[in-house]
Length: 115
Image 1 (cartoon, rainbow, N blue to C red):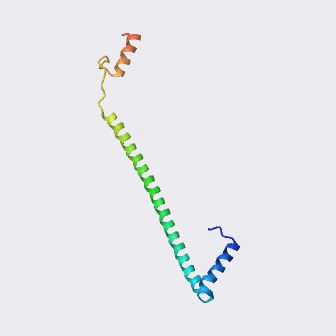
Image 2 (cartoon, rainbow, N blue to C red; image 1 turned 120 degrees about the horizontal axis):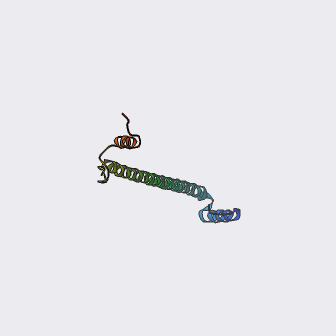
Image 3 (cartoon, rainbow, N blue to C red; image 1 turned 45 degrees about the vertical axis):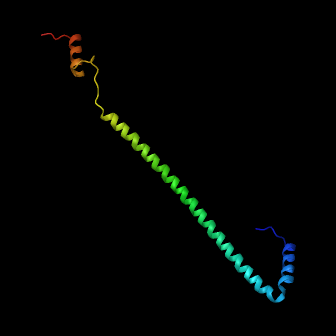
């Protein structure tokens, strides 16, 4: 975490022994340990909260993207249905006779009836 080696820890311990003395050093070490533990728990809690918020944001983005896809699909479907509901316009060049009658006329022209 801090990249402190063995000799650095020894120097810090000697300085702490000189500053606090042998009687207060255990209490100071205990207090320092409690504060370090509290700080670590606080950092862990903050990190978990940030991870949770990031995950929630990713989920919101995914939901929003899905919502957009659904709306786009609905619009495309509505457009397609509107196209199907439009009346069919017939060209004026077309005969009003159905195809079956036209086929019968052509066969009669090719094969006249003999009575």
